[in-house]
Image 1 (tube, rainbow, N blue to C red):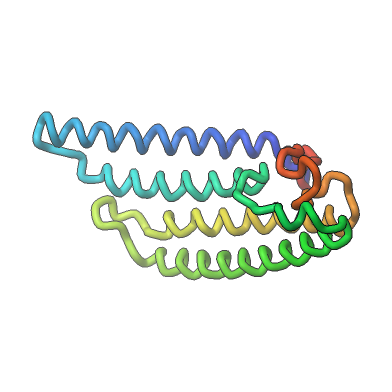
Image 2: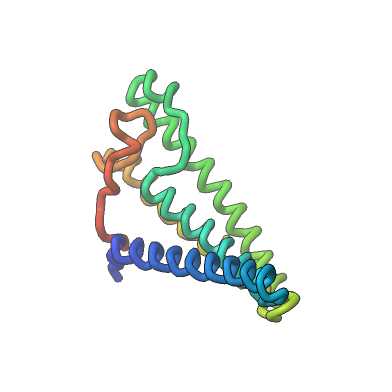
Length: 176
């Protein structure tokens, strides 16, 4: 099954915009209610926190996909291409290991959250932990796909230190 990546990115961007809109509306509305009417929305804090967590993790996925995370390429830019590729392979393997730990931890927290409920709205706190689960799984796919491109010697592979590597567009528009 082929899933168009730009369409998935667009959906994630819309979900992020929706989460930010809900978060801003609830926080602003709650501030106005508290200071003007001396009341408030009890659930506003919980919903805002949930939206914020999802916003951060969805943004992290897009940041990795677009190579927008901070990276220091000073050393990589000065070493020969073959050594840069070797460093990229090692760093991708380390990222996959770290992401597998993140995935395992998020899975554990999601299972725990299935029987733990939020204070006001009583939703399972697994909703919050599942943001990390989706983030880790998505990042594993993105990093593994780039690692495969590096190992195949594809010109579309993102190798830190290559000229214009941070600004090069993501290669295939379709993910299998």
